[in-house]
Image (cartoon, rainbow, N blue to C red):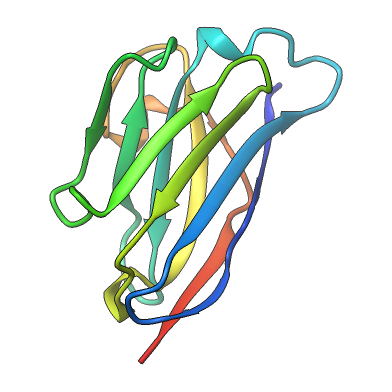
Length: 126
């Protein structure tokens, strides 16, 4: 069982930046680099939506249109950590952000991910 822990959320003003981090916890988690990692978000009253995904080695990434050119996903397999750098934040980015891990597909589809963190709140104030 993979347990993921997100951090880095908070309150930021419009146009500001935040960097989210996600790392697995627990002694059972051994090989971070075998997982595709993704970031997703869910705003109040809305369905969970995809944000970005990154391949196992970090050589490929894909983004939702709503965050393209503003957000950057990256990973450091030596540190067992995946990041989401968020720039140019606007109120529509307010949501709980989740990281997730997949062994089955390099995809933005939430159904491809088996393991999820508890989420970290990002609030963008105007």
